[in-house]
Length: 422
Image 1 (tube, one colour):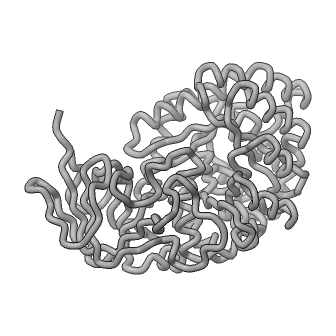
Image 2 (image 1 turned 90 degrees about the vertical axis):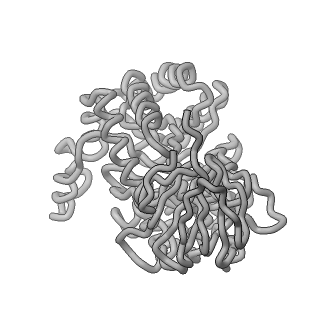
Image 3 (image 1 turned 60 degrees about the vertical axis):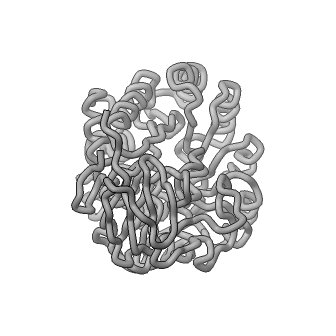
């Protein structure tokens, strides 16, 4: 077995995301409106001894066989951690989107067989291998954008058989991808209109959840509390059943209506509440004061209705914020974390530094991965060298490629000109 070669990155502006005196396992909370949370080092070197960071300093001497990469003053930062996606799917919603642009109401699209159920039908018709292959292609595109860790949900199966098929496909793609995939069982994503709502909820709780728990032990579960999806009472039943099975939970809520889910999420110990576009100030403040993360998904607001989570209020109230793409075929057709950063700054009230923390260190902690999202000796060497010498360009420039070189576990996977270091 070949020993991975060391890598010395020299002359970089290093965003360590590791402020002095801060617990490395904890998120960066509250109003971090300046660059202090980034804890930058100017003209520094980073020695990588795969799979981890070996040392940070100036004038580091590389081992004899090391590959040396001169950053030329560019920004070196932790790889992006995209903590909320629905990247496993089949089919296309392009035709439906064009009808929407022409003024066809969403309810009419549903009557015509569009909406989320068109994706559900496509997923049910697809094989496990087809789902895995299409997911892997999306993961590779995300890697080129600087994403080295990504969460991927099921949720387009709406039956035990097809939810398990999706989760197996996610696992298959993860085994073939350079980065890290964190699977989530989103069994309560929506209601199947072909099944009585209470019957569907009962079946999901009684049959699908236990089957998922048996095959994917300890997996995080997810769902969607919203008008037309799972009601508050149904969502609470689902979370209580997950807790009895020992499964941690996250949940979509308050995208269009505040149904009172946040207090229940806090009572039941959910790891995060995601969307938050319609959250009342009172509920947003309560979330900020808790240990539960808030996850903003501004691409959905950009694509749908120009409504966004109030990230500024949430941070000012002391919250632990993450920011993600919500990549999916309907409401957020975007797998670019830099695009989410640009929108988070423009529409959620974040500073560029806050948006960077919310796409690196904080989502890594949310996903239970404290070994990444920062740069320090012993941390996993998932790194991105930007084209920019100033990290604010991530938010300022809209579109285009920001990643010069992407490194996963100490191996160059994209750019850099030296290929993979093994």
